[in-house]
Length: 96
Image (tube, rainbow, N blue to C red; front, side, top):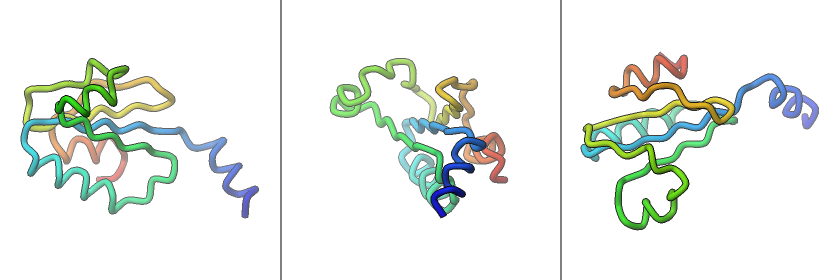
């Protein structure tokens, strides 16, 4: 069992998915859709723009937005351009 996990980890890219936005309804739906998927090598971060969030993620200053929804898909610590809809986010992740 552990060998399979190790082998999969060597082959599968680690993804970071950073979610931010001003419309909490859209953000909440995006997070709900992501949680339904099996992504063992993905980290999902939600940055809400609050003081606490800004302090916690101070090393991520470029992820703020004034748009209702933004998702940044990163693989092996390199991020693509943001997407602005849940459908585009799922498409980028190959989950459509």
